Length: 272
Image (cartoon, rainbow, N blue to C red; front, side, top):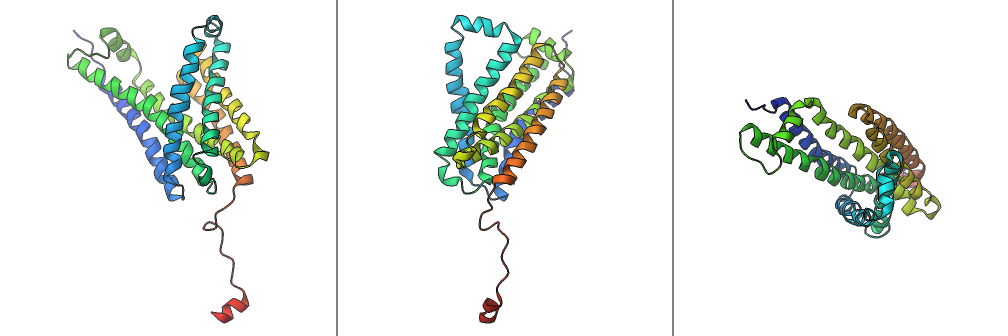
């Protein structure tokens, strides 16, 4: 008798897929209401694709052909550190370039930094989480219906059926944390691009990106439970959030429309 994939597992996949789509949609609406423009969101999405999925992968394709890659991939610590550095270098450089060029005229409104982070992290959530979960859903439904699937066979189905259903919610939790990281680092790089005296925030963002990515990869490499990894990454992320808030409070300049209205002088009242 064929072992069916539990409906609870299928439901968890569907929820994760929806989370991946909901994250950028909700943040887009929230930041628009706070005065951010449309352009930073779409710039963030395009920048992620260009720098993380195209340029970074081109460098990886070259690196993986060298003897050095054997050394890197065979050492958990080295693999995590190099992977974290690559992600940090390309993604934070992408942010910096976008803020200096495409969004140069948008830098008067600091809320655009948050909107950029929503686009950058949001498209990553859709591509890495929602798309993969939709593929998994199609496979599970086909398998349970007895229909051959191009996405896998019995071995894959048995592995999915044996996994705890709640495990498929981890991706949704991980993406929420990841987008929070992207928004926080976007704030740091935003002010680095606005003020040359704050340029140090850009390499700091690269370092922080390296730390959080390397921590996740290294912990995974040592077989740490997925939820413990998410817990560790969450703690690091909260540190990023507090740092971003501190940088924001110190450097944010309110727009004219945001500034409190000064009381009218006696002379002005008399003329009114």
